[in-house]
Amino acid sequence: MTWWCAASDAAWQWTWRWYPGAWLAIGLLVFSYLRLYRNSEPGSVSTLSKFCLAAGTLALWAAIDWPIGALGAGYLSWVHTVQLLLISLIAAPLLLLAIPRGCLDYWAEQPRRRAWMRALSHPLVGLIVFNAILGVTHVPSIVDSVMKTQLGNFGIDLLWLIGGIALWWPVIAPPGVARLSPPMQIGYLFVSTIPPTIPAAFLTFAKYPLYALYELAPRVPGMQIAAQADQQVSGLIMKVVGDPILWLGMAILFFRWARSERAGLPAETVRAPESVPAA
Image (tube, rainbow, N blue to C red):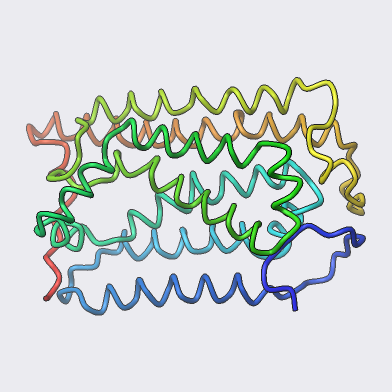
């Protein structure tokens, strides 16, 4: 049985396929959050947290399940890039925001956990981890070999989620843990748009297909595109779609900061504090 999406030489068919591994992963994720919510103080889980959980779960599910997961695994390079954006730039920050603020404050009360949370909120950690994962998972030899196995494709999806969490944590970390002020958070997100330009440029301007996996893949009915054009679209999506997602994050931070400045309050106090979960 095929548990997770992986590349194959089979002709593509627009017939729904069930990938039990993807459903199991999403089920465990939702179960973990619901258990966290149940163990929190009554009323401490905000509507925003619930909305972010639903939206983040849907984004992740869409990225790893049929048809996007299967198309990206071994048929179309540009769909593979869409997976990257869904997992690391959309699902990851939403799942972080789905954690109640009170839970983060509660975890930070333990000195060792607080030290780890603060260390991971350093902007260099976020930039290095995310871009290292981005670079490694776009090396042609790695893509051509790893994507052919279910475990390898699962590993890439998991790495993208870890990279996205690392990228967004310096922005979403609670005040007692965060290292960056609101203006610095905006600057951090702006800087994070620069390194992906390198792999995007390679994909867009390469004079030949870089990945044998997608070059030799059976063409998808209704989505006929040459391997070279497919690769170019992939690079364009990485920048043309990826950067605006980060710009949106910058805009939200800016307007929240401006609102707090007008109210004469620290930026982190704009969001109403949530209760600490019950021990």
